[in-house]
Image (cartoon, rainbow, N blue to C red; front, top):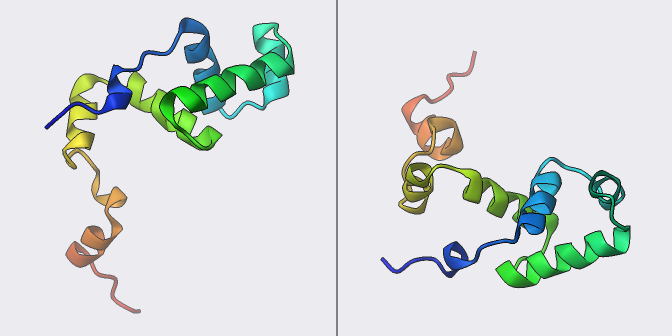
Length: 102
């Protein structure tokens, strides 16, 4: 299996800070205040991150951050389709434990 091109891209320390704050659900105004930069600079960083990873929204930025922060073994399991709890696979969970109407 060839490596995912996104695995080869490394964010700058500032981009990692922004990605973390986005993953925490912060708005641009709050990120700007936290990092002591302007909202325009925050928007520029977000645009750079989106271009670098070919993303379309903030949720995708948060997912990329979470995957990069995850241990390599978990990333490998997720890439291979393993490691999901039963709750993450609703169809399989229902097949194993169908609900009985009361």
